[in-house]
Length: 337
Ligand code: AMP
Ligand code: MG
Image (cartoon, rainbow, N blue to C red):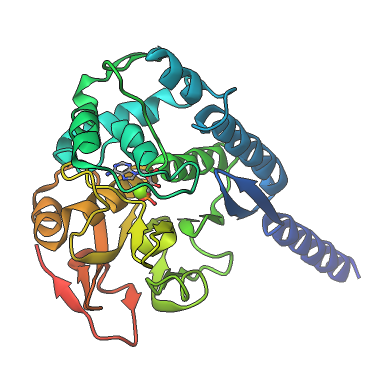
């Protein structure tokens, strides 16, 4: 009798523990102009997501370049100032990546984004004279960062849209880690970070969108099986303005030409454990094009990253680090180091 009681109590405790361990908490958040989902498991899942939600909203309020209450708005208006300690590491990293990518990624892109009419959503095709005036401003080596004190170069303004979601993902990962969360998945406007494995121990499956405006977010051409990595995608199809003649002008601008980048790639996905890096590189690699991107990938000696490149004609290339976790019904070529 005593034995049965002991077993019953043991089973009860085991069930309680495993339920607590697998407690799921999911939130839908609208921030940074996009829908986000944060989902995690474990006994601290609710507390972790409370903190994650608060942090995402805080970052959104600091970074919103269009809102006159934000730090970044004030920074752009005043040509400098102090930003919260929550965002200065991102700016520091953005400046490093600008120099590593030879300016393909550059947060001082804002005057060009404005010139094309993206903030208002009204297309303006710049004249040569306008571009001549604006292009010298796109040079983040003129931005000085001293702790959280920033000084912009004359006439400069910044836009963190190419890196902010990746940084937000890393920040959520830190919050999860501090709360002992070992399983979760977050999607920030289609950019996905996996934390550990699924609660059953298997890998998370993350789809990569078909790179055209009708298929985006609903159709996937490939799936990655990931544990603890993120996938961040940049594509012209994600945001664009249309001319009177039906021509499309997308939102990823080439700081060298001043025009929407025409590098021959229509989609770039970066896989890494570092989401800030992955986000900045997804934008940079889109601008670089295949040859420069592969050379950059081969030579890069920072945190490891892999790429999925889709060329305009539809050909798919992946780098070798993800060959065992990438699956697609389409044919693809593996790029080796
Ligand atoms: P993503 O979707 O991460 O590639 O980021 C694209 C966004 O980053 C655009 O909507 C602009 O706000 C900004 N952006 C555009 N071109 C660049 C560039 N060459 N470098 C940095 N940010 C850019
Ligand atoms: Mg990006």
